[in-house]
Image (tube, rainbow, N blue to C red; front, side):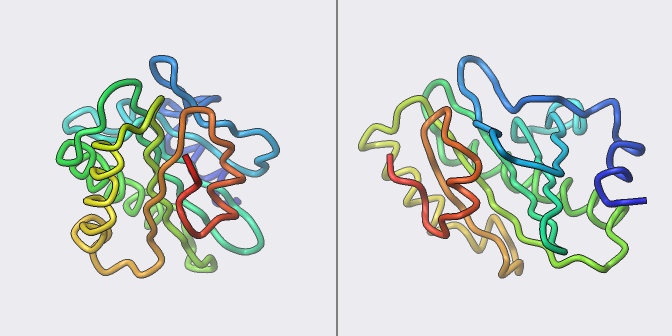
Length: 162
């Protein structure tokens, strides 16, 4: 059984087709061999990001944790959601990854509009990367506008330009 099939079998009630929330979405065009879990469906007892996406690509698993913001980005709330989602994603990886895959984590915050204040909030997120990601060296934080293509996030080691 493949990694994606394992997630579908074990967490099927949390699978969704699109990563979107309140008028904000992540563009998944041309993304193959992936599965999306709705954060609130997989973890009901604590704050968590909107979507956790697992992509199987070239012998590697890419875990994209997505927080969608139609309003204000508040760094402390986002940090807590990212930490919780990262923990849940790691638990899922442990239950379905036979150890054959390298893993990369991309924590992404998409907002309708990034004001200068919210851009400073993003800088705070980057500064707190160690607190959010723990000892995971294969973890990066990016940002984008609602509708940003996931391929742009995957192919750009830096945050997409706003």
